[in-house]
Amino acid sequence: MSNVSSTVPSKKALPSSKSSTQKTRASYASLLLPSSNNSPSNNTSNYGSIDQVFNSTDIRAARSSFASTHSTIKKLRIDFSSKRTTLLEELKFIVWNSIPITLTFFMQYSLTVSCLFIVGNLCIDPETGSSAEYLSSASLAVMTYNITGAAVIEGMATSLDTFCSQAYGAGKYKKVGLYVQRCTLMIMCILTPIVISWWFSASWLKLVIPEVDLLYNTQRFLRVLIIGLPGVTMFETGKRFAQSQGYYNITTFALFFAFPINLILIFIFTKKFGFIGAPYAIAVSQWLMFLSLALYCIYIQPITLKCWPSIWGMRYERLGNNNDAQTWFSPVTSMMSTVLSPSTLFGRTVSNEEEDNVILNEANDSNVNFQKHPIFQHWLPMWNLSFPGLVMIESEYLSFEVLTIMSSYFGVEAIAAQTIIATLGTLIFQIPFAVGCVLSTRVAQYIGSHYHYYKNNLNDEQAVSNSNNVIESRLAELNSKTCIYASYLVGLLLGFCNFLCLYVFAEFFAGLFTKDESVIKLSAQSLPIVAANQLPDTFNVFSASILRGQGRQNVGGILNVIAYYIIGLPLSYFFAFKMGLELNGLWLGCSCGILFLGITETIYVIKTNWERVLDAFIQRLEAEEMENEEVP
Image (tube, rainbow, N blue to C red; front, side, top):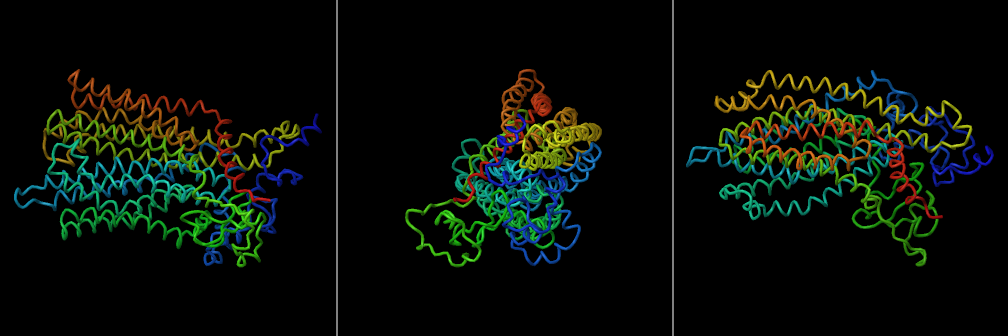
């Protein structure tokens, strides 16, 4: 029986012939530390040398200064699979890396908030002596931007929390950049009809906004914000590109540069050009965010570019089993349509010497085959994770806007109090959301590390009976669980601290926004409800992030819709209008929905079928591996 099991290939064996040539199982340490004599043609190693990695990303200038240092080697080969992590290690990792991400989200959220603050103080109508009309138009434009623009970008980019981090954990470095490129292009396509709707926003906003006088300036504001959409899209996807590699502070440094410039630009542009200067300043700042992130990666942390495959060049790094550069695409103008691969054109592999001698008319017509650029392939798997992420973010954005509309029935003071409460809630939400970004990346990296065991597992009886091998087979699961347990400990502490902060300083925080005593009092009455909501909301955010890291965005999307639109908003209406609790009732109903969401998502995480999660990851990865195999 043992002879049979040792000769029959496992159902988990890769479709490549390399697995059959390996005579012994390499240890986990050797997986990430291969011998130095590897070459691009060596099919027995999953990783090339450091020179090969830097060559494949076309950053030869950085190679000489980084490749020789021990720190670079250590960062290049981050090991997620060679040892069992501990609870203390995960606690340190989560807390330490959450700090720069929290600062990033605070500064990014402040970009539009500072815009409204400056518009409200500088844009004064000379006839009425009031800034109310300009401030209302800007607020309406920002709300529309958040719901139809920012939420779409942020929601679809959550798919990269799964794809990029799992690919990096698996050692498929080039796929990290490929996923970023693919997701960026997908978001741009989705934004196209949204941009058109912004250009003619006055024609459809009048159906839901009774104050028609505000719509002209709102439309002008939105038209200018279109300029910054590509910049903020590439910043969001680029942020995942850096974070998936463990560089959590890059976006923080980028925003440290862009944030003060944003404040100065908004003030100068609004002072000089009036109301329309504010959106121009925001658009410029959004491009500065992306450019500062890109320049930081290129010149300060060029090691990150090991994960960036070439788009425009003749040379294209093969995204198959070896991460080798064995496939050549021609012509160079391959980005916008399809790419003619010589390996598929001629039915053979093109050698390095033939690189510059590829002539398309030499191809035999019967052998010609058109191969799409990898950026245009496998959109459906990414869409299957992007759309549920979009539903998760969009449902939350819309629900809070519905609460604001409901509060308008209780008078001007209630609207002002609702604005204060929503702003404070959004600000404090940035903390658990930032921690959640670290969690989703960490869990996804551990899941990706399972690929190393999977690739080298012969699955024979001797391996099954080996206790060490059994531990290795479950290492990704065990490390992920340790990270999850650590995250919930952090969640308990963070939720309690947020509750204490809002409960004790309710009147103080409300007083920062207004001097109206009635508004302060009304806000202080509802803030304890929001404070009590912090613990379940923290578990909601953490569990949703873990689900993203597992690639289970569909679970979070369904639960979000149920929590906000079947439980939360109906209860808000019942408590506020039927029971006469008004603003308190709105937030009480919303809290019930979030409580349901926190409990159910946490249960789904605890009851995770890890075998199914790991198999789903392998299937996603191998679907591309098989398609990118060279034609014999």
